[in-house]
Image 1: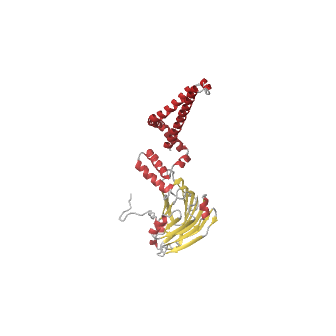
Image 2 (image 1 turned 60 degrees about the vertical axis):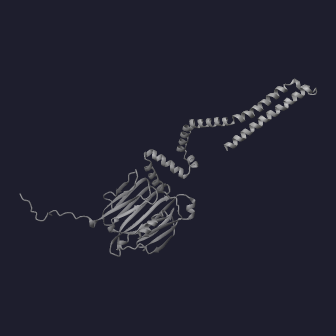
Length: 382
């Protein structure tokens, strides 16, 4: 483009010079004819010869000078531009940096996702002082947060543990687990699936299908059958308070429940309130219940009610990486019921979770008797 403009400029200069030279020759010719002919004697009162000489000489010099000085002029122009760019580059750089830092839409218009990743990594490495650390930290953040298909807001999880009247096929005491999830999100899949499996390979395969599939692993060693409705059942699924139909399919290693969110909801791209309830079983001897977040979550509240159990002590361990402090509380003394609450504001990354660990009353050590003493000991006397 630059070469084309230069050629057009030279062509215009040459044409103007030629016009001047030809016009000068015409005027010189007329001046000569005015000296020889009486009919053109009136031209003698005008400086036709001087004007023609000036135009001819000017046009000729312009053509010659453009030819002789063309390359040098281009070199001088290039050097002037390079000097201006070198002198102005710091100011341009600072202005662009400040503009992109303040106006993110400007950066969005000119930057590709790959360029944004490079910019973010570079900025993080400058802040951390370690390029490798910055690359690995940002790669983890990109995979878990930036590429996450959904983001969940105001998540409320209500869990109720109760002693099951039935036992497993091996006579293992069980807990009924009733779990209720409520959250707001912009759905990315038209169908939500809930799976219960006892095969670990299948479990890991389904776990990678988040958020379209929510998977519950039922350990088979306790004699529980993951394919039975008694082991796992989706009881309710609703979008903005509207109940959706639930379909169930079974196989040897487990079962799957499907509820339609709807293509229209996904295409709308607007936040909706999702609520679903499911129940399952867990052995009392497992002593642990783990809740994991499948998507980036902002604002989490978990309530675990274990009133209808013989659990003597319940504790929780948060497996999260957050600057926000987890708030853990129990019902005050004198209030009937046993409820453990966990609240955590701010953002949580996927795979963050909470492990609830319990001790049964039957497993607590018995208090020592008042007169108990080691064998062979005698009572001291005064």
